[in-house]
Image (cartoon, rainbow, N blue to C red; front, side, top):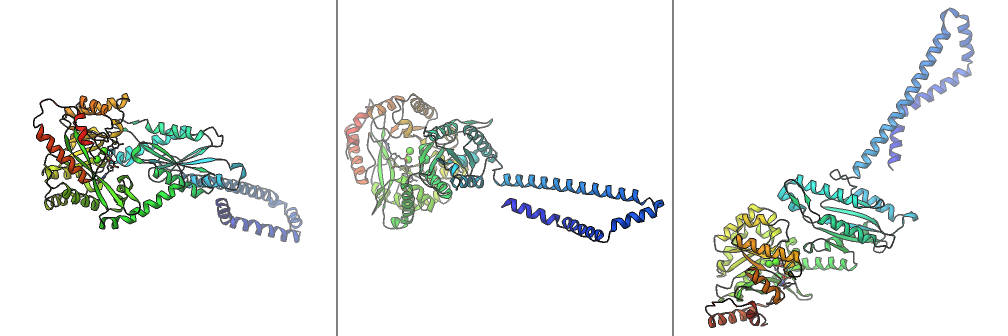
Length: 539
Ligand code: C2E
Ligand code: CA
Ligand code: CA
């Protein structure tokens, strides 16, 4: 196509010259017809003194020189245009920032590999890589930093790929790989493992260190699809299905993923009805004071009682409600139900509720919350708001303003999932948190993993020195609880004590807890957490 255009352009430009040549050839034919040469020869012989023969030779030489110059010009012009054409072709097929092939290049390459050429019909994989943390890096360190991270990643990945593979940059923070996989020796998994290693290796710059996580979605030709667009679509579905919160992960396309997408679309459409019908309900998970084994409050965890799909967990619907802008409505609904369920509970039983980043950045959130608490007769001193680390990266100033406004009324804050986010320590200094919740990924079997043990113990140490309380999430064994108690962790939460339970069951635990306090009003020596267990295990 391009070659054809190129030739058409040349023909048009050189048309006058071609016309001149044709006209001169016709002229030559006419002259020959009238024996012009013989007549000229006779004329020069009869007028010897005019030196016409020398003049003619000079004129002829000049004509040859002119012709030669024209040929050189034409050739130069052809070369220049070819060069320009190649440059443009490359510009259109490469990402200017990383120098990697872009989507157009990738599509052409896939077209070639899936096309009619039999020799190329070999097995290969299309891998979509989604970098999760780029927005945060740009927010915190600026666009230049984001660009540098992308450039460094591009260099690393390009080096990791073989000559028959391809790395391409897609719009946003996505990349695509085409990986030859026809030798049945597990080359694909070697390549994806290598890519994950390269991502896990932090990128150090003068002023910051970038730690990234990536989601990889894989579709295989011809097993999953034989068409270019379908392969790209399937790899993309698989990448988005890879859980962002499970760190870097690889997901192979599964035809059932289409069903997952359909389910998500259905859930999104069902949220409004669910809100109207009161299908969102709060479950309560107890928090235990590790020092004396007593009840230290509850965390409210949302559930969706879907009439056809059963009880859905927040992982299925929170992000969908964020996308549709209905997360706020769900929160107010849960807060109202929580207020009703906990009315009359002692002030010493705080209630923790999770909020999404969008809520925190909404200026109306703080005033609306205060009005609502007042209307529901919910003492703000009983409320703890849990915010995940990554939620704070968007707009630290706005987050701080909202927090300070609420803090003035006695509301407390917990930093949720501590240690899993992009950056950690600076929040401890800059934002008014009361408690840090150590993410369950560190707590689960932390005694067996030296790395996790170091992390858990140093978080506890650090928080103690900053005057902050700590909650260990996901405590599942007595050994873990005891070790956490020894390390000085303030609270524990997890299946060891109780799974999330219905408000009525939580109410019974509160009553038992009140009775227990009455029996042992002052505890001189702190009992071990095991003394709490019989209460907690009451379901
Ligand atoms: P989270 O705030 O970290 O909540 C703790 C999650 O860990 C809960 O999952 C809880 O059921 C689970 N968990 C508690 N103890 C253990 C344990 O010992 N072992 C294990 N393996 N898991 C344990 P759940 O209820 O599925 O909630 C998931 C996440 O959804 C929550 O994580 C929270 O971030 C979010 N979420 C829950 N409710 C709401 C809500 O009302 N609003 C918003 N924005 N997010 C919510
Ligand atoms: Ca939480
Ligand atoms: Ca958490």
